[in-house]
Amino acid sequence: MRKKVIIVVSLLLLLFVGFVLFNKQPDVNVPTELILYGNIEIREVQLTVNGSAHIDKILVQEGDRVKKGQLLATLHTELLDAQLAEAQALYEGQQHVVARLKAGSRPQEITKANADYRAAKSLAETARDTANRLVRLLPRNLASADDVELAQAKADTTAAQAEAAHQGWLLAVEGPRKEDIALAEATLEAKEASLLLAKQHLNDASLYSPSDGVIRNRILEVGDMVTPQSTILTLALTDPVWVRAYLPETKLGQVAAGFKAEIISDSFPNKRYQGWVGYISPTAEFTPKNVQTPELRTRLVYSMRVYACNDQNELRLGMPVTVTISLEQNNETSNLNRCPTYQ
Figure (cartoon, one colour):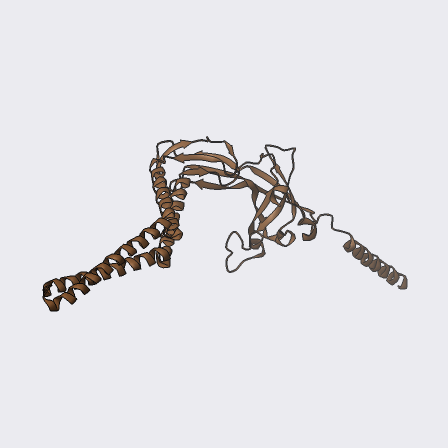
C-alpha cells in the first residue's frame, strides 16, 4: 500500500514539473512583425489664377514634371498692362508734386515776390505823398474835395496792395505749408498702393507651380474664359508620398508613430522602399455598437499613414502595396528613420 502511494505522489510531482517547464517555454507563435495592405496616396492641387480673362498660353501637358515656381499658363493682359501704365504715370506724377512741395520756392520766385513788394510799396508811397499835397492845397481852394478824396482812396488802395505783396514775399520765403506736404505724401502713398495693386493683378494673370509635381489633368484650353473659381490644371505632388493602410484594433498597442516600415509593390516586387509610420487615427474607422462581443471588437480598424521614401518616383497614386512593420521597435530608435527629403 505504501509503495502505491509513493508511485502516485511521484507521478503527480512529475506532472507538476512538466507543467511548470512547459509554461516557461517561449511562445514561438508570437508574431514579430505586422503585415498590412494599402494603397499609395499623394496630395493634389487644383491650380487656378486670381483673375478673370481668356487663357493666352498653356505651357505644359499631362504627365509633364514641373518645378516649384515654374510658369505654367498665362492670361491675356492687354487691359492689365494699360491699368499698370496708368497707375505708374499717376504715381510718378505725384512723386513730382511731393518733391516740388518739399523743395519750397525757387530763388527766382522769392526774388520776384520781393520785387513785386518793393514796386507796390513805391506806388503806395507815391500815392500817399500825392494825397498829402492835395490836402494842403484844399484850404486855398487849389484842389477840390473830390480830388482829395480820390487821392486818399488811391493811397489806401496802394498801401493794401503793398501789404499783400509783402505777405506774398514772406510766403515765398517760408515755402509750402506742412499740411500741404502731408496731404501730398498721403496721396503719394495711395498712388503707390494703386500701383502695387495693378502689378499684383498683372502677376495674378500668370500661373506658377506652387511646388514640384506632375501635371495630372489639363482641364481648360487656350481661349477659355477663366475666373478665380476655374481650375486650369491639376498638379499631383510628388512629395510626400504615403500608404493609406488600416491597423487592426488588436495591434493598436503594438505600433506607434515613428516606427520603421518596409513597403513592397507589385510593380517592383524585388525592391523594398523604406518608410515610417507617420500617423495613426485616434478613432476607429467604424463606429462600434453600444454592446459588443470580443469578436466584434477585433474587427475595428484604425486608419494609418505610412510615409514612403520615393526618390525614384516609382510609387504612383493608387498603387497597391504591402507594408511590413517590425513589432520589436521603440520610439527612441524609430524616430531616427526619415528620408532626406522629409527631414
